Figure (cartoon, rainbow, N blue to C red):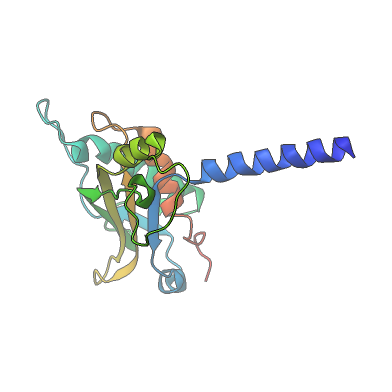
Length: 195
């Protein structure tokens, strides 16, 4: 009985750790892939040339461009899509990146003012909750990317996905995190040649 309880407690702890690891602060909104899958396309090219960064530019879009392109190329290659010249491509890949801000919210229980008057034991405000509300309630910088697949013959949109995530370090581009987010964003895409 004792061993069963310790195993259950261990499994519950493992499950809790896995759930916390799954919360990544990334919002991914993919379109339906049926129209893209129906084409059966396997060859792609980038719609635009890579961004060239001069020595004085501090723009994170210019810094992130190589990481975004490498991550998308890697994932599409794993799915069986082939990077070719734009003249031989069946579809084009492009993205739009923009920084944004998200206004945080102060937690409801960070105040001792309640809308319904009640008797509360220990009416003092929990200072840890107040500190957490202030820490989490500020403006957060967001990284936003819209990845778009276009038909090369008529430039119609075949598929798109929007990605928003909290920028953790505004001073550098984390190539590993960019790769992980791009991999997740292409998660609903079918393998090449499947109809």
